[in-house]
Length: 155
Image 1 (tube, rainbow, N blue to C red):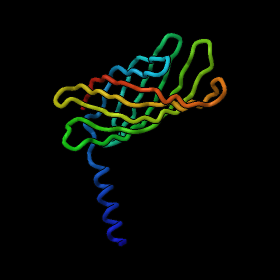
Image 2: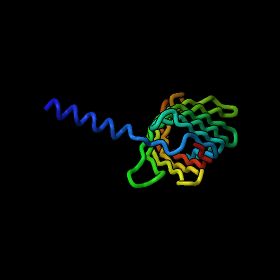
Image 3: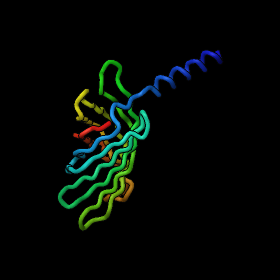
Image 4: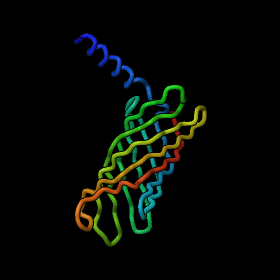
C-alpha cells in the first residue's frame, strides 16, 4: 500500500512538472473587463520556470489606473500545441481620481494560446476581484471580471 501511494505521488509529480513553457515571455495589450469598467493598457508576461509565470498589467480608464501583478501556474493540454490552461492569484491596486485607492486580491483561471511558429500569444481568463479596501458597506467580491491579452511572444 505504501509503495503504491509513493509511486502514485511520483507519477503525478512527474506529470505536473512536465514542460508547459511554450514561450519565454511576451509583451502587448491587456484588457481588464468588469461590471462598469474596462481598463486597457500594456501587459507583460515572463516565465520564471517551466510552469510558473509572472504577469504585470497596467490599465487605464477614464479617471482610474489599475496595476495588477499576477502569478500563474501553466499546464499544456496534450495534443494541442501552444494551448495551456492557467490558474493563479495576485494583487491589484486601483488609483481613482478624487476617490480612495482600492486594493483587491485577484484569483484567476483561463487559457493561454501561443500560435505555433508565429510570435503571437493570446489569453482569456476569469479574474474575479476580492476587494480588500472598504467600499461602501465593506469588503465585497466582484465575480464578473474577465481579462484578455494580446501579446508578442519571444523565446
